[in-house]
Amino acid sequence: MFAERLLAVLTGERPVHWMLGQTIGDAYEQLVRLAPANPLRPSGTARRSRPVLRRCRSASPGPDVLEAYASIVTGARVQAMAFRLERGADRRWRCAAVELGPAAT
Picture 1 (cartoon, one colour):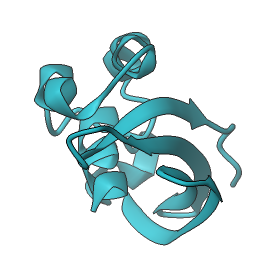
Picture 2 (cartoon, one colour):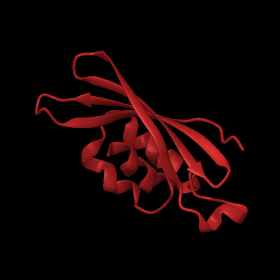
Picture 3 (cartoon, one colour):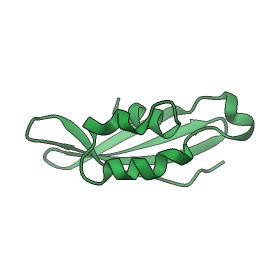
């Protein structure tokens, strides 16, 4: 579910401030820098296609921490997205980091 939320922000479907209560540390600033370019928005002939979350997996390197990666597909283009979720004292998961990989066709 969290990967879908990031996808909506990074395609320009949702504004960055939609993630305010769901980020901690530098993650919000990372989204502020990434989002204006809409890095996951389709381009060229793929513009009619909505990016699709093809696969999302996670690993837990420690208690209350999840590191996840996802592949995003738009037409023939595949792009990687990674993010880190941390559970706070209130037991809510929040994003602590976001990274995007280069697009491959």
